[in-house]
Image (cartoon, rainbow, N blue to C red; front, side, top):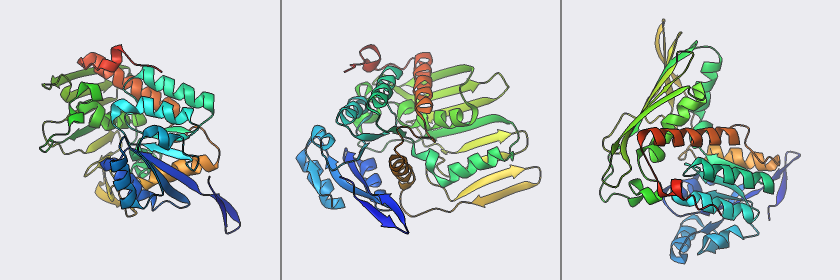
Length: 344
């Protein structure tokens, strides 16, 4: 169980983490947990003992589980970061919640709204913390962008343009195009574009969407337009066929912000342009991959006995999932889970 310790007359609860899944994102998250104050990675769970053991050796983890259920039942774990493939998020989250564990679930939170609503419902019933791991919302450059907008530096936002695309290298990971795994450009990377528009403009009044079909039946490319009754518009493009700039422009009546480099990742600068010209605003970054910011937020929420994040709420997650469902319906993207959600 977690151990409390006293620092400068303040009692800080040490949060004990477990990670479910041993892929690339799990490894990055594990590395960044070492940067989070009063948090410890104590357990790893995988579908095989071999994968779990190798992960544990790499990150010096005490508790090793060759099954997801074993990790969920570990009494020394406070919260579990779910880093499994998309299609497993629903069942893995329910497994952890039913085992009494708080959960940080990697995006996309669920395959569809039916699953997402069931996950949130169970968390509320169990009075356990649950949050979608949209790490971008906790990054310093994203927070600075929101501050600039709140301070009126853009005036009224009128246009958002965001793209995210890359051409997968051989051998191509099956999850990218497999409909059984929730593959396709929208759910894997286009979610960041949609998240950005929803965060800054809210729920759209009209959605247009189209896709370029891959051989497997999911979207290789997806084009989305949000329209708002106040005159704002968002143009969003995702691609698994070409390398895109992966930048975002937020354009208002008084100025423009450009999130350069890969807009969803930690960035050291923001470009701001208005009538007086262009300037680059530096953003202070810590070392690491950038997952420590969301991990730190989760730990703070747990210490405050919160069951829902005040930064990325259940309402935020459900709106994002609902919007992704609407886009997929309009564009013609279908998954087996949509007709057979496999609710437990």
